[in-house]
Image: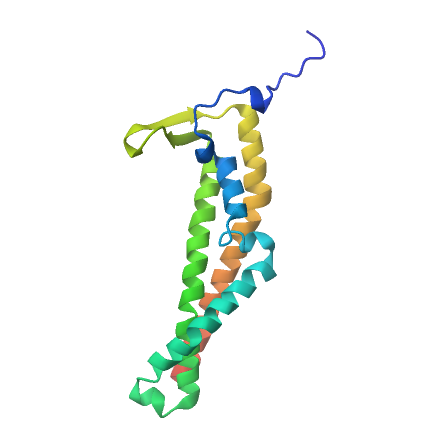
Length: 172
C-alpha cells in the first residue's frame, strides 16, 4: 500500500473523552476566557490588568494602613505600606492564573487523559494516540510554556517589589 499515510487522521480517532474535558478544548477555553487570556497576550496584556487591579485596591490598603498610629505620623512609610499591601491582589490573581495554566500543561504533557463520564465517581483514563500526543506536546511547548514563563516572571517581579517595599518601610 504505497502512498498511504501511516498516521491516522485525528478526526477519525474515536475518543471516549467528552469534548469539554479534552486538553486542547481546555486550551481553547482558556484562550477565550477574559481572565486567563491576560498572559497569553504578551507582557503588556498581563501588566495592564494587574496595574489596574493594584490601583483599584490601593485606596483601600491606604485606608487600612492609616489605621496604624505609627504609620499615621510617618507619611512615606504609610504610602509604602499601603502600596506593598496593594500588591497582594495582583499576586493572588497571578497565582490563580498560574494554577490554571499549569494544570493545562500537565494535561497536555500527559500520555493519557483522565476524564469523568457523568460525575466525580466514575473517573476513567484514556491513552492518547501518538498523533494526539504530538499535537498536545506542540501546544504545551510552544503556546503554554511561554505563558507560564510570563506568569513566573510577573510573580517574581511582584515578590521583589514587595520585598523592596517592605525593606524601605522598615528603613524609614
